[in-house]
Length: 425
Image (cartoon, rainbow, N blue to C red; front, side):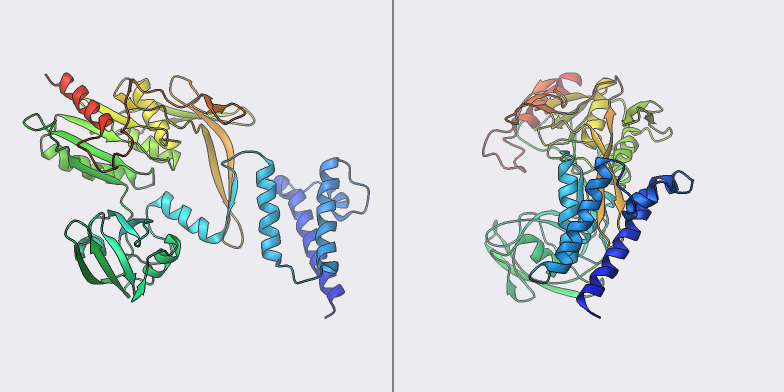
C-alpha cells in the first residue's frame, strides 16, 4: 500500500471519528446525532463556526504531517501532544491527560490497591543511596519480613539502586504475585545491611496509621490517640475504623488527626469518613457549570468517634477531599483546626477512560462546605495566594529542618496535645 493511500485511509478514519465526536453529546443524551453537523464534520460545506473551522484545520494539519513530514512521526505521541495542548488551553491545573501508566497509578491512589501487579507492601521515597522506605503496610511482605521505615534499599535483584529513578526501581520491585524479589537493605540506626527474599503479593495500600502519642510533653498524662491520614481512597473509612478501634481499646482521652501533606483523593471518601463523626448531615455540595447543585450527606449508622476532644492538623499541602473533611468538622464545631492555611483546591474532577488505557481527568464543578463557603484558591499575577483554603483556629507549624517523623520537636503537634489536655481537665 502506497503512503498516499495509507494517509487517505487515516484521514477517512479520523473524519469518521470526527462525525462520531460531533454527535457524541446527542448520543449521551439519548437522541440521534443532528444530521446538520455531519456535512461540516466531513468538510462538504463551509463550517458554520470558528470552532468547527479550527477542528477541520487540525485534521488538515494532521494530514499534511502524514503526507509530507520528512521523517516517521509517532502517531501516538502526536495524539498525546495534541490532547495535552488541548487540556492546557483550558488553563485549569487539574484538567489533564493521564497516560496508561499514570492512569494505573491514579487508580491505585484512588482505590488503595495495586493495579495489575504485586508488590512488597511498602511506600518508597527517593534517596541518593537508594529508595528509602517511608511506610510499611500492615500484613504486607515487607512488614512480615521485618523491613522498617527509614530502611534504605541498596540493591534490587543484584543491581545497585543508588541514583536510579524511583519509578524505575519501583517497577523492578513490583511484579507478578507469587514471584520473588531480592533486596539488599541498609538500616542507618544500626549500621547493618541485610538481604531479603520477598514474595510479591497484591496488597492493600495503607493510608491510615494510628498510634499512641508518646513524647516528653505527654509523659504521665492521659493518653492521646494520633491518626495520620495520608490520602482519601475508597478504603480510608474502613482503615480508620480499624485504627480507631485499637486506640479506643487502649483508653485514649483525645484524638489528633494529622492531615498535613494529604492532597485529598475521592470526594465520596471524605463523605464516608465524615460519617464517623457527623451523622446524617450535609458534608459538601457540588455545583456544575449548568448551575445544578448536588448535595452529599453523611450516611447514618457509622458514628464511632464522639465524646472526646479532637484536633485536626493541616498545612499548605492539605487539599481537596482533605479540605472537605476538615471544613465539615470545622463548620459543625467538632474539632479544633491547628496548623497553616490549607491549599485551597475547591474544584471537582471526573475521570473518563480512553481506549488505549489512558484517562482524561476533567474539572466538572466546584464544591462548597456545609455553611456555603468555597475554599477554591485565588492567586495574584505572581502566584501569591489571596484567598481560599481553610484558616486554622490556631496557627502553628513545624520548625524548618524538623523531620516529618520527629514528634518530639513538632510544634504544631505539641500545640494540638496542649489543646486536648486543656479540654480533658
